[in-house]
Image 1 (cartoon, rainbow over the protein chains, first blue to last red):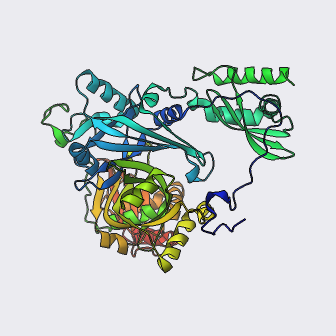
Image 2: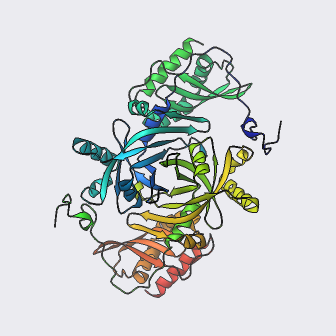
Image 3: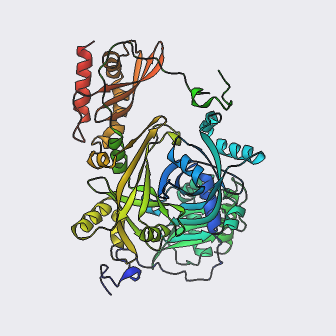
Length: 274
Length: 274
């Protein structure tokens, strides 16, 4: 095996990275995950500040912080001043890209989920102008006071490209139509609380789920890493090593407060199969 | 006065914004502040993740998250993969811009301090390559494992333009030479703790300082908002209304742990003038 600093080694040598986790040892049902479009919609809906890339007068890139609201089709709504460089840039050339960054599960910022949207801004008019204004003020109430300031403009970013990175080794692109049609995950607001509650009070149920439903029949402990509308991401300890695992809800959760019922059903199903 | 939504009103109408604060009523010494270049250097030195704007193959802007280290002259060092779009973009066109965003003092993200750097990336070689690599790994130890991966490149962003925004109505540009020569504020790591300590345990001293040194001889209460190497930003209550005020240390603080001695000197001076 070549040394990690050998020019021929490239990504086939993991360096200090952990070894591959042990595989499941029993059959298990495939567990749906959020699509890249759903991940992108969820992350964009969950924040209200991102970084905008625009083009300066000589076509160079310019990065700036920006607040945004979101239309029903996921289009970000910006409200920027021509007193700021990004505002002047958009007046001249509507091409723009917005990156939105979420919180990492751990302390490593490179493991943060993020999404890049790229396309072209349009100035909405008529009813679309009011809708865009309302979407922006819903996210940024403090911007309402700026309505009458002539140097501020509303812009809707028409998304043409979507690139989602969930963290290390979790990434995908999404088509513009898929992005527009996808739904933000309704449980995202209660997910962190649910993860803490499952780990604190239901470690036994998580272990049952891992053994009965994820193929890790030899699991000795299981911890919940993430929850989404489709199921739970687990981290499973086995005598063969630790591994990520996934268990799916019977049905995708459609309501913000639906995680409890879905988790109870999952526990009941795991018990029935144990 | 025209209504806030009148097209002619522009920024001369403050809408719901607060009225102008009352002015000081006694002479006071001018209090130095960090320059825009120092603000920018301090903010860039204090973070390790920003958003990068690069140019796609057709010259459109592309925004992405990036980790960075910092050279002694404030140049950011990036370490990006050509498997990622920003890496391919930099290979093709070295023009790039990095925005770094700090934490807002309050809950309003539009009040966050941020700085945009723009310029051109260069691939360092020889000794400069090692220095850049060390600067990047100092900020991003987790990147060390990627050293041997052929798709990763180190880039140094040679800064040509600097735009600092401290929050609402605090903003300025800085020249590239000033940015390179400026020093990050050494007290930034202990500033938040010092602010809390002053407000919790030394409210009386803050009030003395406000009355004796900031021109607000009628101050009834004073709270510390921010601390930097040059002095304290205060928020002062007076019978005429509340106002921001500033008191300066006798000498700029040069050491990370120098805030205590400087604050003690400030208190002593305020007492002597009361």
